[in-house]
Length: 199
Image: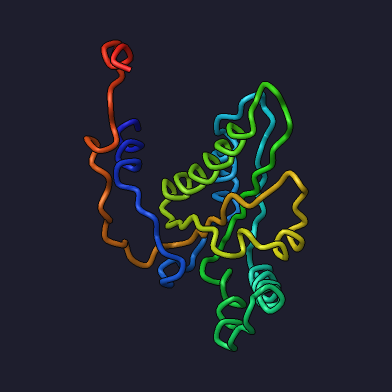
């Protein structure tokens, strides 16, 4: 089991929602329950639950796409083209399931805001890993609608909430080639007493 988990971590690769690679079938209700349960087990200092999940499934995906098309017409500085409006209307149809992860910060002197935001990021990554472990492809993205005032209103986000990401989940029709990863020598250092004394 441990080796299988490590293999998943060492080989995981995002799929691409924009390339039409994530398709049907998506996870069934039992699999979705497992994925969400795993995501809710991330580190959470002071047990504040600084995240929540919004599921976009079935016809709701097209309904949210229509809302995106309406919002972009109001928010874009230049009138969007018919092609752009169609793109927005189809956005959430790029995968059979999209999970919006909402970061929410609760003021607490023992759990700084940064820790709560990191917990929401951990929830996003764990959603991806849990879905990957079940054999599904995932893509964690935000795009413009992750930062839109109009989308905030449609999603009924509170003042202390913001979008941490949208996780697209479905069956990967192909595996993308791996991309270059950072070399450990470039990102790893070891702290020593000698280095501290030199400063």
